[in-house]
Length: 119
Image (cartoon, rainbow, N blue to C red; front, side, top):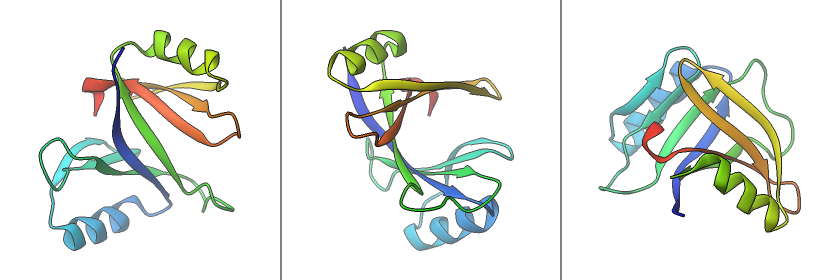
């Protein structure tokens, strides 16, 4: 079972402003987009971690403005492995054909798992 770091995801209210800022700062293009919801930027080097942006309705309070996205070969098997290691499944989502599971580590830190080829 392969699990690899795919993206660091930033919650943002103004998706386009954040994408424009970070593209210009990092000097990268867009890798993928789900209009109105998500944008993944190209990694700065081949195989690198992507910076991604997720549209939210209002600023995320506290410290959970960033989360990790993990690309996995088998989503359900990985969710079961996470649970066996002491984590837990929180939610399932699907937007524009992009599906993922929200998970939490043993201390409640949230992260997402999605098919490795999805982003």
